[in-house]
Image 1 (cartoon, rainbow, N blue to C red):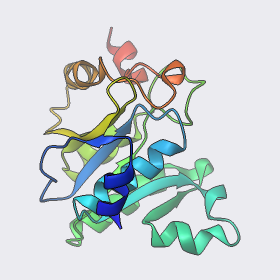
Image 2: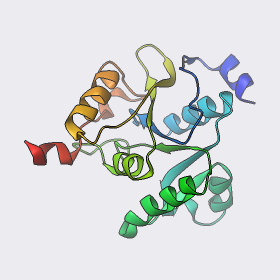
Image 3: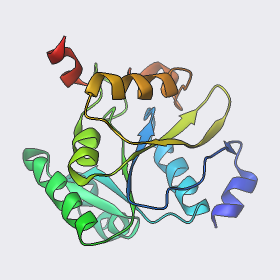
Image 4: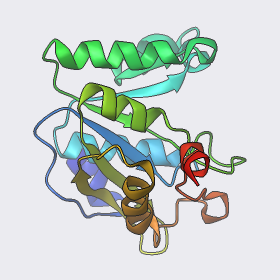
Length: 186
């Protein structure tokens, strides 16, 4: 199914090899629901087992079983810290997957990225793989996989450099890759 999708898609899949260990897979810029479709297409084409985080409302009613079958993990925003613990537990039991996180939130309206992807990667000892959508070149795929150092600003400088020339499906909704934790250190 994924091969057929890429044959008819106007998008070009341009990707580094899929990671061979658990990774936090950043999906950015996240500016449209179409980004989700493209990310699923990427991971299916690369035969990656993925999980993704979504607000718990997406899992209500008839959508719940479908979203879970697609790898969804519901996030109760009133207890978002529980998700970090759950992901760390899954990794420590030996489960191998890519955890897709869209740190720029709900497709606009934010001044900075959410730091959950960073905390999960650091606490679970997982690298971060930079997935992307670039409307200007009509390419999408996986970029480099990086190990985070714990120096938030330096790590985010590397991430910003990668995403500097990427424009999402709706470029006007792009959010600069910057974490609140960076401004606290300054």
